[in-house]
Image (cartoon, rainbow, N blue to C red):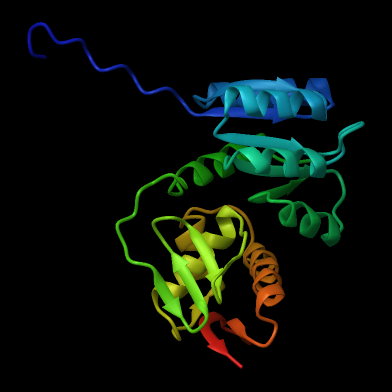
Length: 240
């Protein structure tokens, strides 16, 4: 170190906000995350969860769906209006609709109770290895037919109208548009967006692609920007 210079401050560990009305479970999850090297905060209701999410700006929110009063979906929507943090939704119900609704609210992932604390930590670690939304990417915008993808600004437009997409939806669109007309398997998309050590299932891709398609179709109902290849996966290409 050069004389007279102060040492660089140590980087802060990632911050995880755990939200669950089951106080014992929330405490156990927080303790497990702390042992893995994370800073944690805990909230037991939706109002407090939103307050902490806005005041402490966590990197990840582990959010229970079945909260009293303001439920997990409402909390997720409110957090998404102000923050681009990662959100993992927890649900005690295994029905597919719960998972679909949670992801449409802006969650990046879901887990069904009961779950392994070790798997939860692994999923948090995988999410944090993904590029952050505020990362500057020096790349020109991509134009595919009526679709424009501003990689640096993380904006999506169709015929000049901006389409609001989640972080994960944008990441999938970015991967698909990097090689238009080239087919990507679900596994390739998982590896590119979630990482090669992803511990979830490939069906997550279908859920996010479905939400992305609906948003694009609201602006351009006569165009299909993401095609399904049966038995293979997906590819990019505006098709009438």
